Image (spheres, rainbow, N blue to C red):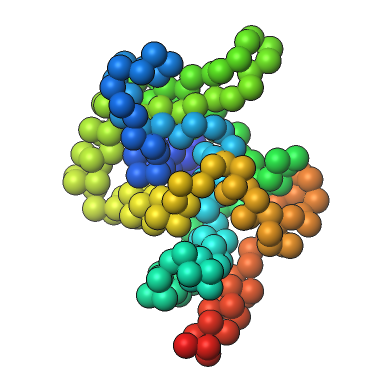
Length: 213
């Protein structure tokens, strides 16, 4: 198992835990022990993109501050994302495909699915799957809490997923992708190429915002 595959599993575990929608017990279309769900792969990929690209997450935070969606103190979070060389240390480039940033998730998600920590439910018919929902199961939440308690060095994962949950709010996968597409550096990336970093652009945006306050 590669380190990147394991890191992908940790990212998805905590995105499901922190950014997933709570599910009520007893739903007919969900696993019996489901506790949270991200209801489409488009949304999971959009959230995953922000987790892998802190400069783009910082830009979204600053947009939220400018629009009054996030309070002005949130700009401090964006600034922190740019400090200590985080964009270069934490950044894992993603390729741009037809529907935006994309990273194959099957191998990483299999690490969660095989031991019964999470489950993918496909909606549609064989050969015509229209949507996939990604469920966090009760043992997955228990493991997420145990990892956070016993391995302080991995606290970055739940912390970052919690921040992304706050920034994404209740937006759908389509709405999150639309927000990411508003950046030319993202939208104009050729299909199949890596989406390029924008830490310099974000730094300029932060300084402009600071100058107005």
